[in-house]
Length: 341
Image 1 (cartoon, rainbow, N blue to C red):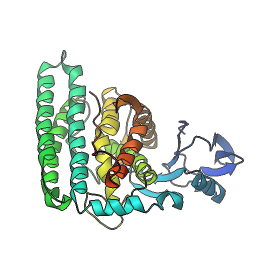
Image 2 (tube, rainbow, N blue to C red; image 1 turned 120 degrees about the vertical axis):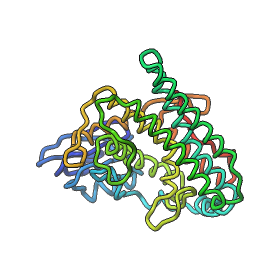
Image 3 (tube, rainbow, N blue to C red; image 1 turned 135 degrees about the horizontal axis):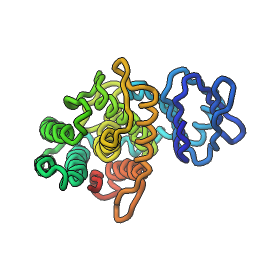
């Protein structure tokens, strides 16, 4: 049970979440295991099945703007509870939909993707610098991979088109080339004892891919909240194609935070020898809990941003607000976030 000041993680099977005065109470088998004031709480993340919520707790969270998110054992967000007032904005959503048809959508699509590839290069450089003295060849190979990815980043930034539909395929092709180089280089940086053949997404059963997928699921819940608070429509994206029930904008905006938040966290856990396990093709309960807690710790870390240092969770919210002001024509051009190395 994580007790971070802004987020509460509930992972015990059979837990009951209720309201007691001005506090959120978590009980297990009739015994209170934690109480948290509603004040200052922003997010309730439920990782286990068999968890019950009282209607009073749900109403209090809704009135206070506290999102309740549910994550499956594989890291797939499958439900959220959020106050209707948070998704009732009109002007921003109208402009967001119209941006899909003009050069605003082009600018956003390029920024999301180039931000992702720039962060891939930055993370490789960050990890390589610790190999400079102990593994010179690996150090040089990793930096060369980073430079190649930076070339693809520049190619993405130089693309031209009148709407995102004009260049989506070119963006995805360049992104795929960069990803192939990134994952191969990253695989070489993981300790030899870790059996990892390469990146897999859905249906992965190995430890590394399962851990990455679960971490992305945790990050996704934070990005979804940021998008909603910014007044944006989570289902109206730019690079990810439209599909009923697919939160395309959330998936677009998650891209530039995968490496600095999740990849860096998972790679560090593996290389430090932290015990992560899969059983029957699924992460164990202890591993899921550890990943969720470490990803949230990483979100509390500070990074340089707009001339100051801010927590990553704050940067995520700020980036969502920048998208909103950009589509409304009230701010400068949108720039993807790139972490330090």
